[in-house]
Amino acid sequence: MASYLLMDPKRAHHYKVEIALADRLRNSTRAERKHLYSSVYEELFREVPHHPGLVRKSQGAEMRALGLRDLLETLRPFLNPDTVYAEIGAGDCALTMLVAPQVRKAYAIDVSETVTRGASAPNLEVVLSDGISIPVKATLIVSNQLMEHLHPDDARDQLANVFAALEPGGKYFCITPNRLSGPHDVSGGIDEVARGFHLREYTNGELAGLLRSAGFARVQAFVRIRNFQTTMLPLGVVIALETVIGCLGRTLGRRVSNLPILRRILEVQLIATRR
Image (cartoon, rainbow, N blue to C red; front, side, top):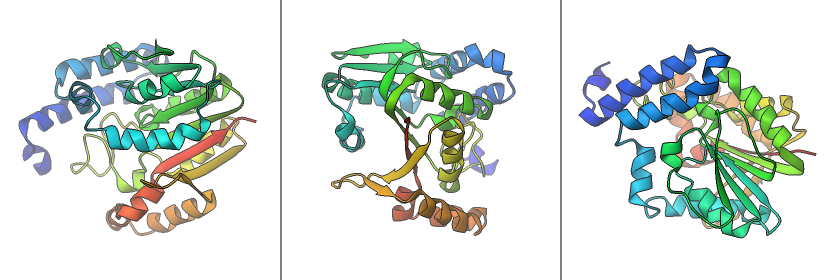
């Protein structure tokens, strides 16, 4: 609580609002969440106009250009004029707008009309969702910093919907922060575990298990290293590394997993293929 009291006023306000809204999501029923994802995010953006998701949008691509270029290069081998691309949790649609001119169709799927407003590019269509359904068919589906925002009870349902939305042979790229180095939401540096809109943070092993239970027979880990091609990593090695770090205890494990090279390797970056 001392850390909370010492925060600057804007961050303290953001923390207070987001924790309260996140508790509404955590304590909601599955039926309530059909509409609640959209309403709590819209309320967050109204109450916290300095939210990073809105600030990034207003400041344009300059601040994010490097990260977006890295991610675009990762996706490039899977993009061609026949690709039907869908990004779930597209946010300000910056990545989808870069991808759209290179593919046959690009869908930006999100729960918030506010954060997606103004997105425009050739072949781009913005689709509002309840946060769980995937109301399109695609050959490549991407989520970047999304899984952690889902209620744990909804994660399995959304992954099943991703599997159903993919054409045979299609791929799902899932990127999410590793809970071993977190928390990564507004509660970072204040709480031991995520209490904000990161309703659950995952390890590679945990998320790989969910993907397999959703029907994906092949799940691979990858690491994106700037100026180098995407490198595939043996998933078993990554999971073994997580197991070792998990044995170090919460404080030491967090410090070790935040070492630059380990943080990059351990970031949950999985490719699941529908056969």
